[in-house]
Amino acid sequence: VGRNHGEKKMAESNWVKGIIERGGKFVVISPDYTAPGAKADYWIGTRRGLYDTAVMLGVTKILIDNNWIDETFLKQFTDFPLLVRTDTLRRLRPEEIIPGYETKDISDGHSYKIQGLTDEQRERIGDFTIWDEKSGGVVAISREDVGSKANEDAALSGTFKVNLVDGQEVEVMPVLEMYKRHLADYDVTTVEEISGAKPELVGQALDLVGVS
Image (tube, rainbow, N blue to C red; front, top):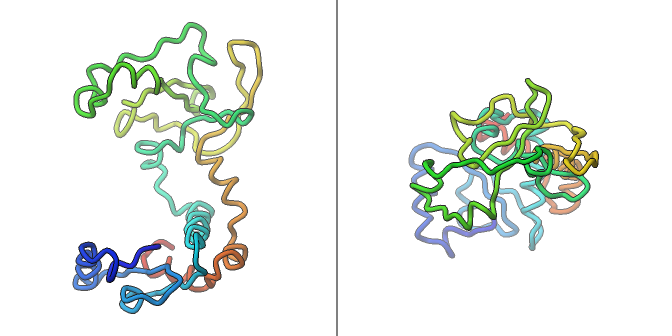
């Protein structure tokens, strides 16, 4: 998407060549019929500019609408379960909802020992919150709660009302829910109007790579 590997990124063209040699399938989304486009299983033509972005947003909407997503992976390795306040569009922090909350001690974790996180960075990043569907409430998590440590009961959709420590009641939702609402504008018809990409080609491309 948005890159001509054959002429402007020649070092990476080896990856494309390897895909072809191993019988892989690939799709090119580009305004011009490039050399990689000529070798692709599908070339999806778009208008010049950032119109390929509209196509990718349309593809994302199709994946989410049809539940062609790995929810376990999303809960374990993405920020999609994290709660966001709808009034400020900022993440809901544990200290906003849990009286006397203290940031979790993760000094023995990968963040410090492997990734080189500093105390200053830790203070700035802080902790996060999710909505635990099993308990029906907000749960605080740290950046170490990933992979097998992630909360498998974290909500990925819906809106929830929570009471802050200052007495306010605010609405929150997971990041993925915000994406869903943003993507509502990117149905295949609208994507075609924006980008020029034919809906049937987008659908065929998804079939080709084994998504649908």
